[in-house]
Image (cartoon, rainbow, N blue to C red; front, side):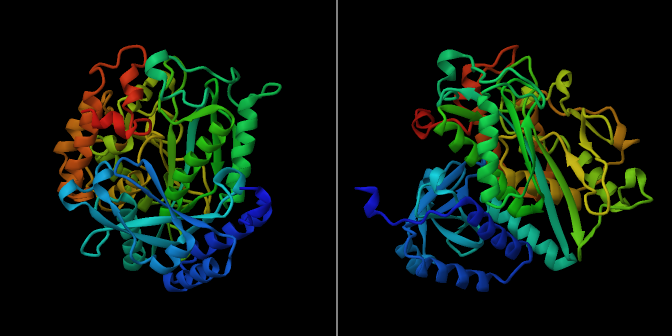
Length: 476
């Protein structure tokens, strides 16, 4: 069809930013759901240039799924969207496969047409069980339920911001072909903050930053990271569910931009041995009535007693939740102390080998940084694990808990054992979802060599939950 005959929505980047920032402000301000729903449905009805609405949701492992609904159909049937849950790893078995997909109208995004296609808008969905309750294996729904309950009960707003590192490799399908080549090819051999002439890494970072800005991310800084071809693009904090949504969008944008340029954006935690791996440092705080409850100008490191108690609970359950924060065989390569890896279950203001760091802050920015999080983790499960543990977990009677000589597992089998036996994880996720998640991780681990060794094995990439294809897993 001739392009002249199409009249699909294409919005300039500056206008996109205004639209997305307005939607973000509504979300942060907790504008009533009914009002936002009416506003979005009216917009979709009136805007004739929109052809489809892309609904996003994540499986139990954190892999992003997308469904395109015809705009006219969605406007009429938004409250009766069903899909086959048996096709989603970690969701329902075949005998009870039907699930419903609700729309979170507050999580609505206008996306650049040059990367997402003209005539489309994005919205996050919520998986709903047959009885109308949030589906327990949908970590986004569980996180939202927990966050809303904290606000209703104590007036707490859970805030988060993530520093997500990744690698840019040559070739559009570098991860999928790794088991054949057993190597990744750098596109840049610089390092921290470094930029080279005609640098494809710098061009990639610039383009991703432009797309993020247009989608209301409120960028802060971006730069090449320590390792060759490694990048980090930082953006502002947000309410916890919105922050987790932005992680999914961040990775999606990076992959879209990289593929368009004939390259691969990889979020494997340690794709190349011998250089720094990639982390997803997760900065969290809790506020009430606009006041940061982690700030105390007279507290140790200016962190409040409430903040230190939050840290103590996470340290207590460090081994219990390690698999939720580091969900793959490859993630345990990153927890290597020779590369600034946060493998020590302790808290520190300066030691970057600690699981938790207390950065310099003020009354606005005071926060707790959980460093032992891999970028391939399910962001909703990460946030739920950190906040629910920090607020409701136990505190161990260990002498000098914050500096004790304790270490995270150095392999996925130990992490699996810790995860399965932890009573706290049953409280965190429920017995059924805990078992489902552990079984998925066990299957992935069993597809790979048991010992990590000194080089990245083909199966740990080939069977990685962000790389696998459905056909490959159906072979087993």
